Image (cartoon, helix red, strand yellow):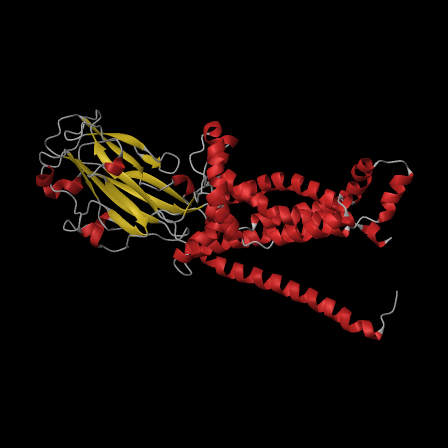
Length: 497
């Protein structure tokens, strides 16, 4: 082993110190992102279902002429829910909508449903009956129980009636970490029905046919059919949060928020890949020209210009794309692929490719020029033409550098924010199987989602934590890509010879 000279020790120490500083910065960034992402695991999981009694044969609404089969627009439906607007006690929503009396239903509606803020029928207070029951949303380890009363009025003459149920608007049962079941726990005197137990996760919408029971007074409203909706935990909060994170729907501002980041991840990756597919062939062709063909004078002029292009602020490129590229894209592709707006997947990818070109050209040219001249001389001695030398000698010898160039360009593309924010359309949707529909439609990536939403979230809330989870995922992806690129660069062992 070659012994270090005393004068070399400061330089060697500086190299090790720089390496240690880089590692320290990476660890610090990882720790900070992970530390803030922990708030995502404190999230509650809301849920809600609507219930309403109906006639077996639905009749049109006398005012609109439409059959009201959608319970979200049924003013008489009872909502049993645990969400961010609810409270475990009686709140203003419940007090403002008491369970309908027979007098209120007369001439208006032949059925009544309602609930009580109780855990057991033994705690029933006839003075505290409400149409809805709103509870506070809890984490995935805490269940709950709701009571539902159902009866018909004396105006109803059919022998049977049906209890219809469906999820509340914006609630997605497939994303729910609970088992939710609906059971009949009491039937009216003299009426027998088969045991009813419906899994509201597997069968979120449907109807239960029941023999008609009529309440003859307000005191009898709770003597009819009594159902319970039982919510049972089946996952830990950590498991439920991770499972929700890998869903395909990002809608964090709804009453029943969904934090599936898969559409953001796929959109980011696909935009980066399309940008690379455009930038890499053009960039490598320019790199090859500069490194192998262009006269020295032309190279001296072009190289600084290309490197200056890399310094253009991305917000400037974004506005350039918005004012010039987007209208042009709509003009060219509006008829061919049905594009109606310039802010789309395709426009963002095109401007992103323009952003990558200087990087690909500059680093690619450096990789090609790093190939020793002896390789070219040997090819000439074998009778290779200039074209054959580039194709069969220089490019294969620079393969590791070219691959590293592509990987670094990919990392640059998935980390870009302003261009995607300005040009993608800002709609978090899953990319379609139909490539034409994906190219023509709006999209949203991981980086612009963080930029758009971070300023409007509750500090240290679940939404805040999920944005940091996206940031942590993005950081790990770019770190992995850069490490792979570094590993490829290390393979160029011929440089040492």
